[in-house]
Length: 352
Image (cartoon, rainbow, N blue to C red):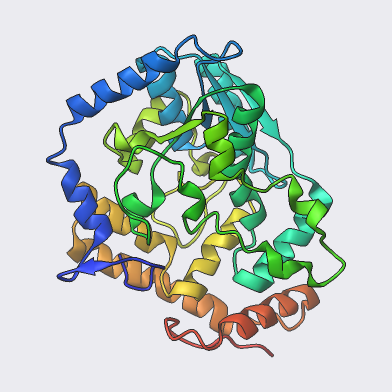
């Protein structure tokens, strides 16, 4: 991984994501699986309702893999909890429906306030360069809230983002109690109340319950990646066998080396493009790094491909003339204002 990834650490010039992946090769996964079975036995049939546990899902490949493990392998009766998009891809919508159709599970979905979401998309874009933050944050907070309300004690997340991909809190643990500390769900809203557009009341419904509230409810959130080897491409292969469709069934997207990751929302593509402007590398670099770790490709082959895609972003942002389109001109002006001093970028944005 590039050293521009936020909070990533290097030991002897090797990133912690690679170091942690190598640890998987000496992990006793049979023992970890037995641990998971014991956890499930503790909660099976002990909920205040008909569900043994809940799974936080988006509808993507990892959601299919999680549901496969929990429902088919562990024979649990899960409730799937998700947050809807305001701009679904057709593929994303069908994949979410497929989870219920194929695995025979119930899904609770929160459909966000569209009026507030539009305000939040713009404000998060301008303030932190993460336009989809409003939805991303709720993907973590809403499942917790629903479990507490419904009396469900076991909540299953996918991977520990910090440990798996490199982050500040990268100690391996089965507990997801501290997941609000990861870079995706960073609580940054307090500074946004300085105008009259968004109020405390507007965001009350998305706030993450505190750790004390979770403990009082006896909620046990866990990372599935602690108990089973986590390989995003393997998850995709499993998901395909259970009816998951990649984005190529709908359209092709530029600047990527795959078509199956983060494909639920059209707007999320902007989030992915922003990665280059903020950190000097693109999603293609993330996936190339994973494929090298998985042994699917080697560095000599992937570095030129990743570099070529980075220059594609550079040409796109530096030379495309948006001056005749008022909205897009404003878009570029915001990017320029926010990131013009970023030393990781390869060039300068050009605003006519």
